[in-house]
Image (cartoon, rainbow, N blue to C red; front, side, top):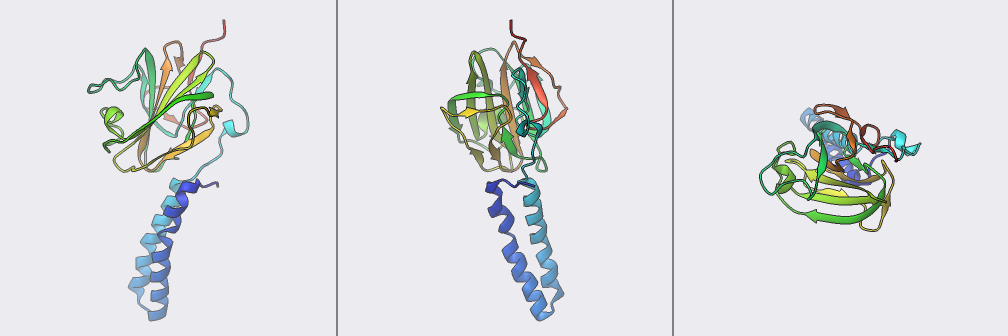
Length: 225
């Protein structure tokens, strides 16, 4: 399975102490040293799982022009009207619908573009590290926000880190074009993705539903004409 390049320092880091302890145990015959190596091996195995980057249908077949795909694996927290939160209002200015996906520490954390188009705005803001499932995390936590435009269609999406996450990776910027479902970054450990869609879009997921990034259709644009 493909592993995101950001994960290799986390995967290989614990292997050093594991090797030292295992070698010490073999040399001295001390069982405790060999046993102490196992947590480091388990941590490395978990990091391998966390930074996995599986193929999805959008990698093989271009999605239809009217679909918006989930940008991440996880559980839908919000589907419809933008969530109410402590001022300032977390949604961008204007009339939007919102789909938010919460990523647990065992979900795939590679993020994919929910729609196609050119990145016309990009911003990053440092902040707090509240649990990503809390409503106020939308406007207090560290986040990266992208505005994507394709003709007269605009989608806004955000990467928000949670209580365990400490870094957002965004591998795109203003002027670049993204395809629907294309990888554009990741968030390290428990996190959340917000997608804001115009009122004319039909939301096709519900709160509490499990979704897969680059696979689950979360909304559709109205038919042309």
